[in-house]
Length: 235
Image (cartoon, rainbow, N blue to C red; front, side, top):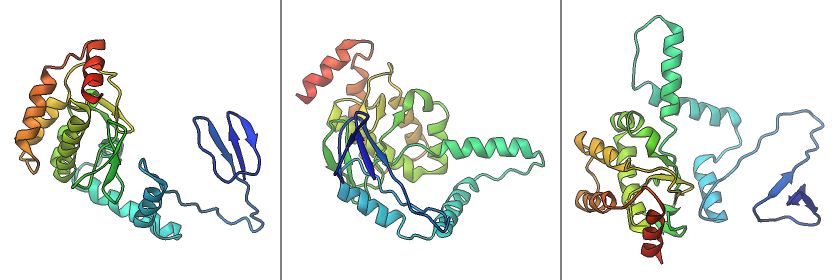
């Protein structure tokens, strides 16, 4: 194992952190057998990554993991049945549906902990904190479809919106790694909330989220003033 920091080899180290860290691994695989690796990911802690790994991939049996993934995806994709002999059109549809169900992106640990828009660790009473929200791109079609296919996920998304508001001062515009980037103008969270509510997704604090909508509607999203308001709120 070799660890590099800023492209320079750091010898005699087993652990390294920084902004430009690289790892080179070499394996003595004389039998030419497949190399199997498991990876745990967490935005909270190393302990959280280990717990996520143990909960989600608790076996070294690659075929078992593959089979579980296939069954999970077939269950979701099978919610829409198409009776059509045109294979190419069906392949295109299910490919788009597959990509549609990538988001909202799960960003919370199995413990319920997550790193929110204030970069601090919080713990929610819900299953799913969404950490990547390109609402500018998804509010027209992707979010309304997820509301129909997975109202449970959309319920957690509404709770994510509220957590974001509590920790950031406004509803999300465009978040990456749980943090507001402010890289899109407008108010894309509002139609997502309205659509979910109109479709019967209401297992969240409706009144509090409505208050968040009114506050966010009065935030200037057209320039530096939005940044100033957020700084004032979180200082």
